[in-house]
Image (cartoon, rainbow, N blue to C red; front, top):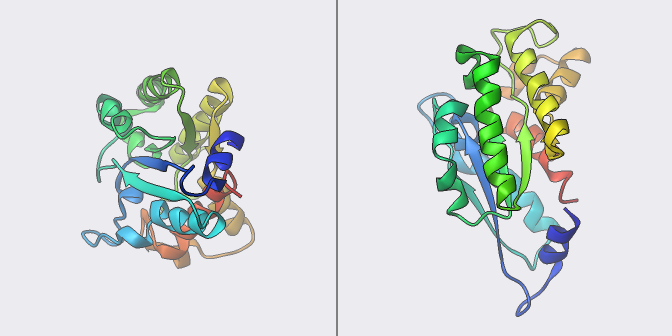
Length: 206
């Protein structure tokens, strides 16, 4: 991200607009306790606030192309919509909704999106999922943990960024924290949970 950080440090009239595009399901969209949508309390805009604090002279857009209820197969069909926003960075977050279709189909869809983004020479960060309280986050055999592991493998395979949200929440659980404190409902984080994700993402901008 060194080139992007250099752009963020530029001042008018030498700067330009930086577009951060978030592609995924209900979590980046901002759904808290359905049907309530807290756009400004969701991690895309919490990250925007942190990046703006770090780079006060930068012009930055946080753009969400995410749709509640969508999975990565559906998201892959819309990847050109993401690219039409001329992103500087794309963030992909679909694992929560990918469980129903299985790991192989999810892997294929994620690879389609990854390749389309990289073909345009755009920076990319993959997100592992936030929790589902109906699954034990400490269970390494859980479906969500397996999807998280697959996303980690894809990040290594394609040498792209990784924001390991699942690991952040698992660290809390490992230390005895009740994860419900970070959740608006069983599968949607509250603002405190979204901040945890935004903090992981901000490591690429700090």
